[in-house]
Length: 268
Image 1 (cartoon, helix red, strand yellow):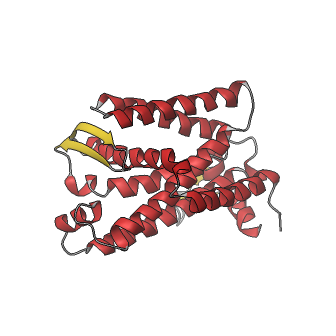
Image 2 (cartoon, rainbow, N blue to C red; image 1 turned 120 degrees about the vertical axis):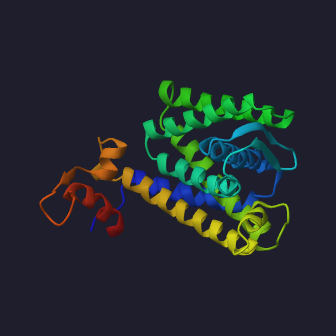
Image 3 (cartoon, helix red, strand yellow; image 1 turned 90 degrees about the horizontal axis):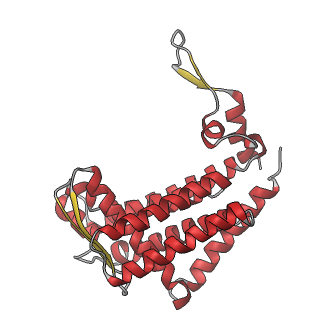
């Protein structure tokens, strides 16, 4: 049985510390800017779903009361409505998943900066302009520090983004879709599109998805930091070498080195 290495231990401790900080100070002014960032990710997820279903985004806005709105024309409404909460779950998992390596954390941070800046082209309000420029500048500074001054630092920032976004999304999902039914909520809008699924049932599904994706993100991050993945690329570590066997019962099989990465994590 192999023990966790230093990177995995640091990740686990920091992950739990971030969760504790988020829970303790979630509703305080200290974390208010991060709540606005999560609102932005919620709204940009609506916009992405609109674009992916051939719709046109008119405006993306984030308000001081931590609410937001995405105005659009066309697209597939049944896909766009749940994209806010589902997208927040995906963003949180995405940041946690890629926080384990320098290059992957840089890629995640760069994508965030890109989305923050691109969204400013869609009639943003003053609050969103301030928030987006602030986080675009802040994240860019950390990217510079990571590659030019000190490493690791960006990993910790990307991990914090992922943990906070996820915990806040779970809290928001519980408050607005499970604990009570709000007629203006995304869950109620989903119910109007599909009456067979009650708003609270929709919220429960989103909550389960959020928790599941966060566990998946942390699991993948830990695998990335395992000794078996040292000096390997992200995809090489996760997928291993696929061997095609059209003559056998299996189309492909996972080679031993990839499976060992998974086994090492469960044996810790």
